[in-house]
Length: 370
Image 1 (cartoon, rainbow, N blue to C red):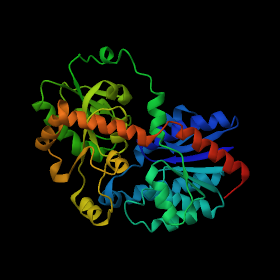
Image 2 (cartoon, one colour):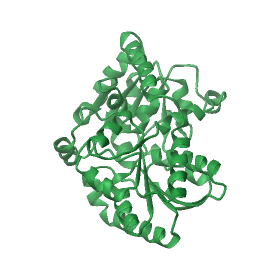
Image 3 (cartoon, rainbow, N blue to C red):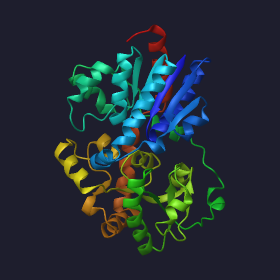
């Protein structure tokens, strides 16, 4: 069968690659064409557009880049129409993908949505649109099933694909030596995968590093950027390591992490963390009026209580980061978070989301069920 996938972020690239691998195991004739990234490209098929040219954060940033977004939408629609896949698989990235779903539904294509849009966070009535334009929705967070059920929508709960990625990880025994790291305790800096995140968060993270000299700091570099890009922030002697975030988390003592998928990955590696987020002031003001959830971190959302401290906007500054990080380096604060992580492991369940989703997609596509 012919599978067309659309992923617009680094996390979507990861999940898309694992899903493609699972689909190949079920369908020897699988053909892939996609908007995605390096990980998906490594699985084969044809990369049409890289997510590095697509990801824009926040209301203001989106408005500023509308021309590019509309150009990408038009290109995606045209390519799907030309290729005529047996099934369209949309991965998260709702601002873009819901528009693609609407187009594909009009074309009579089978529309599968993997990693459901976070409509429970704001504008919940969008569920009605999703119900109309998406044939099969695959959820990865336990509480989403009841949410969609409350709106009269049946969904498939497949578990969380991050568990697949983490369980498949094989540590590099030479990681420290290869990157010239010492045995000194490591604090990982994960400033995000987009320009807006990195430019707003990394300078503050670097200020923290100047104050905690008893630790070695290491930056997890986003794969779509070069070392030269990070040098503009005066990283100095702090190493920037690419394509080895899991190896870094595997040896890290603590971390400062940009809000997003990485917060859950950090928790799954049992690394105490401070979660940070800083956006355009207008964007944040709009978000605070619209968003209906108590937390921004996936860790806190899944646990439904405060497990990791979230520093947003004004609180996201070096002084508060230092204080919050200090509580996690030793003592009761660290012990409490590690105990909460163990409880999180139980809530998350077992690996296998990619395999479950792939099997469901093949079944639905093969049966012609919409």
